[in-house]
Image (tube, rainbow, N blue to C red; front, side, top):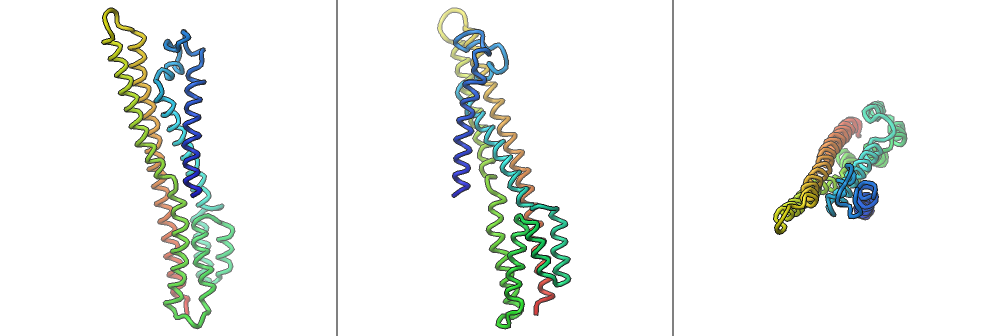
Length: 258
């Protein structure tokens, strides 16, 4: 539920910011030589002539940047406080020496998703290891169940908002094409708009609108696609490390269980 409200908040805030940037930065009077804002004298004014699709594309670009920052922070927290590989090595080394308390201390110091999953398994192991009512297989099953439950809680946090990035990539392309189409319609309308000389201003505005929207759509889409692929790869590698470490822990406990 919190994730849904976060995404909605980001979408609304970025779209509002896109409109404000388009209206007051790109549309500032100093960027034009006329009061109608049809004759830009610099790049900012030219971008403004891209029309109403521009603020939407600016908002989508801001969404991509926001989700990238959020994913970087979330994955950093998921890694924990120290080096993940060194942490996993310490936990397994303590388990090899049957020092479960030291392994739990390492998890408490490291924190993060991997530490939370291993700690869940270790805490369950402490509860069942000396339980005479459970046989060897049931003890290992209880530990595995605790690990699976913790993994089920942590994995969605790693993948959160990746769908939003892929969605923005698709939407940006579509809005860019929409702006391009609208711009070309305006350009051809200027060419065929009645008798007499063609309005060079209207023609240039139409062509600018088409090209600007194409550029903004591609920028937002490229950023989103690259970020999505990078974060997907990071999550996959991280999940693989967690699965490898839990499997190694289960192998150690299998040897030590009575």
